[in-house]
Length: 198
Image (cartoon, rainbow, N blue to C red):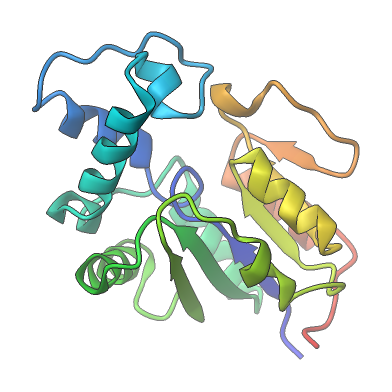
């Protein structure tokens, strides 16, 4: 059977942060006040409801169809595919039908039409716990940038990998591997005991 890797999208595959910042500044002058903060409300020091509305508006705008790859993500996905891995995306950005279509088109344009076996799109900021539950006890690799979703993976006995960002360095966990590049991630995956897709 083929091996399978589970991946988040924003902050892992696609450069969401930089393009959100560019989009946001078309609405006014918004400066990043805290680079170590994950949530836009803390990062820009704006009201929580305002930040939530901005994120939802951005995720349901045409911009979501044109995000570039983050760092060396394209090379990393290509490496995994060449080595026989099936890759499934789980992204909680929107469940609007047109936004989902733009996300799927964006991922296919950047990474290739057949790069991903499936793309699961959930409502913005929603939990991935239930989506990950179908992979429980498979020991699959789960690549994320947000600690809440990493912990969901741990609770299902997955192998979480966190892609390093300034905003996720406040926590370290002995069962979570941290890497800064996809080259590091793929080297780790290819040299680690693998599993069979159930």
